[in-house]
Length: 455
Image (cartoon, rainbow, N blue to C red; front, top):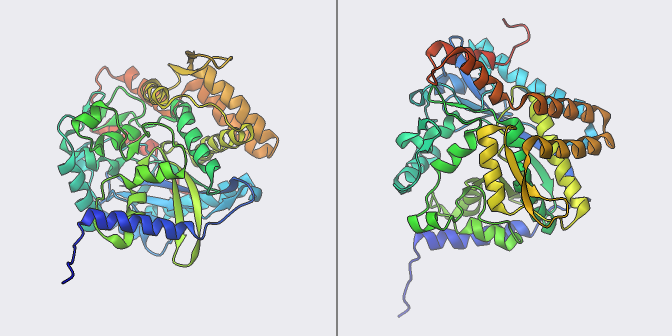
């Protein structure tokens, strides 16, 4: 008599993950260049009423109605705007104009319902104000698993703020702009991902925009990425001591190839046990600061996308785009060099920590000019070097793009990231790191999007 062997859920999910990955790899799109020039943007926003209080989910959902480019997010007061894929050949102004129309459209719909759309890296008010979208299977169940699986030895403080037992829910008040760029599914894609990881601290130093949590100055300029890192860290104590990687933040070391990349994803705990979606679920919950993802299937060709996830939303859309075009330029330049030596991940993580704390007012590690040693440089020196390369890159391709990027990078080198001016203003007017309700509402109001025809 034959014996029936029942497989445990993890084994079933792992087998389905590999099978679905193999299917996607069979029909990969190939572009002329490894970095295609085809890109799209996803931007998260918070919704407030006219009194600058977060709206509830029912109000948020009214804004979503009948607009395909507006998506709901994990936060009950959050939405996400998703652009169509653009090509750089279409021109920067067309890209900006179309995205501004999307943003204005969403802001106008919110305004018509007595609400305001705001650009905030993190919600500055109390944690108790934040609510999760009412979708048990896709949100709360998974968040509860992270909460129950999280080990007690892991940090729950971020600067001056205690994240408490709600650390896993606080992304409901975190907003960023993510750039997705189509890349070829080959070793160049891995090289581009690794380069994205290496340069990320430079853009945190000039783009930090989340210094306030739970109504208090944290003492940091950028907290959003650290909330992801703290909230979804499931390492055991030995894994923590060994500094092993998690599904968030940085990899333990750079990826060698796609086998290495998918192996790291395969090893992560499955937070849902539905073999039909094993690959897509694990890919979706791969919350590193940058990632590669395969999009397609069901008879459609598979596109390989490089996604940046580390830059918080900026005060304006033009600033969002300028910083990401800076990333794009450095990535394309790295391809033309080929075999470029990368700063070890340990130093990149320390650079990221310093940039998150101090913005441009710190020293960052990089190679000496002869490449034989690693030393500290003023962050402004490294950023200025990168900015010169970025601006030169765009001057050879698009004068309007070069003008925009140069304007934003020059300003940030002079005055620092948005979080710095905000914290300096607060400290000039108060000795207390705890903000009152009026100050929090003032910050929200200053970051609401002006609606044409509105007041």
